[in-house]
Length: 382
Ligand code: BMA
Image 1: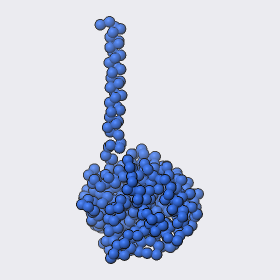
Image 2: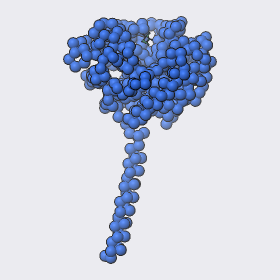
Image 3: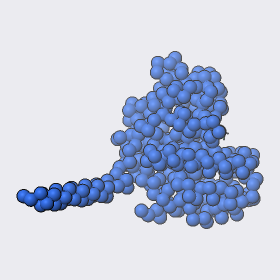
Image 4: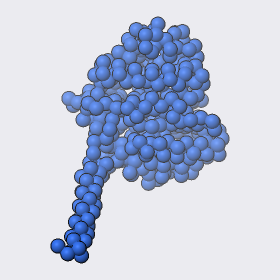
């Protein structure tokens, strides 16, 4: 063969190889696109209900964000759920004629074997409310204000305790029993022959200084170990496969590192953050914008979902807080949901109720394009 022919042949072969590489790159990209792939979850044996929930949360973030309320159906201003005859009611529904899409509940005191949680909600009633919310397309998220295992005080008792319940710590057995009680409750959440998927958000706001599991009452390495061991107990020992795990620090102060307590990609499904407005909307919005961007960047890099796991302005004294102050910083944030804290009392509530001055503002918030309530959960399209 002439050298010219040889060179041509080489060129053809080289081009063919390049084309083949390009083709296989695209082919591989199409069939393996993120949407078709199962997400990588903490639980490799996650139930179908969990996979469906994860997909739903991802779909939600393409449309806007789901709006949630802590203890939405357990009580509100001037009413309390009847434990004998459940009547589904919520302050949000009284104002909007629609329910929240996300329902927050708290398991605090289940660890003690009590019938009621730290805010007097009966666990039997809570189970019924969870089943009802799930049946109607709502999403369940659980926090856990557990007591201090060392001192017997509350979550806010800062006696160092984490080192006592990890590894072979002196209160390990007590903690294992506490986790078993949580697991038994979660196991009892079933509907239509399936387990109910739950977003579990334990040991939140660890960078704040108010909980025994938080800074400076435990080291970050003890915190991580506590988280990892809790996952092992729930997932491996108690075989719970209906949980997504959320990591949710509190608002980041200038020197805070969001990742300081992060227990690892294998132990966290969703990244969250809790930020409250303490009657200073300017500071609040600065934090919301700044911190959600940090959470978003980290979550995107890890291909994980993210959410605004707690927020609110107590008593909502600020005009147009929902629609004009908060909404603009959430509309393009990419969060899956925002959870407003509980309507505990007239002097401790974070959602308007019938007759509250923010009713109209909240209706405007609902009418904005990105806010998704319960009825919107039925119309989520790919
Ligand atoms: C806190 C307050 C407390 C409550 C606890 C658990 O933020 O609302 O009154 O007991 O959450 O719900």
